[in-house]
Amino acid sequence: MTGRWTYRVSAAGVLVLAAAAFTLSYDALHQLALDSRVRPALAWLWPVVIDGTIVVALLTVLAAKRAAARASYPWTLAGLFSLASVAFNIAHAPDRPVAQLVFAMAPVALVLTTHLLMQQVSWRRPAPGPPAPVAEQQAGPEPAHPARPGDQSAHEPERLDPGAPAGARARVRAAYEVQVAAGRMPTGAGLARAAGVSERYGQRLLAEFTADPARPGHPNGNRPAEGHPAHPDAEGR
Image (cartoon, rainbow, N blue to C red; front, side):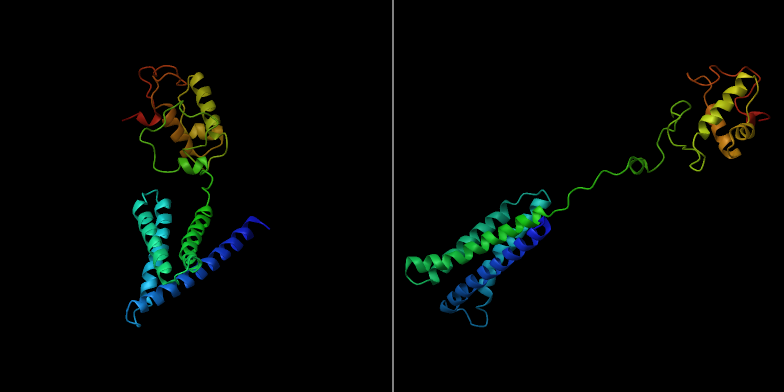
């Protein structure tokens, strides 16, 4: 028998036993209410109050456990009403020890089977799912400090243009360094043609590469000479 069917069969058995115990205790408490001159139209409510409070208190304990809250009050309530139910069942029994034991077993069984059902429900709580993928964890608003040239490795995803082909950033950087080494001033359109990417992507990478020429690790290694603007768009401004 699989674990799933074991749980179903045991849960069904616990429910049947709890219903049988409640019915036996209900009958004894109902008769005791009639003997105590409770109006017949209302006598059926008295066992519901006694045994129903036990069930509700135990279910509250389960809810408190799931919420990681203290459950001292519902435990106290369940204990007091359980003792009251046992005492009232014994009071209704004939004046013989065996008969009193028979009547006391019903409320005791009600408490124990309800507690078993609570345990089975807690065991069936869903296990925590696997952690979210890294890409989903990183999704969200833009960081407060944007990346600078050199902060992103060649193996990281293309953040400037999600639609750019793989390795496009490395090709643009290589073309940029070749043109700088040759003494030419790179342009976004020229980098785009050399790397086979869109002109917009080339312009955005060019702006990133030339954002801070004095920063260590910049392809130029130093600031551009005077008279040469850091960005082609700076001419004429």
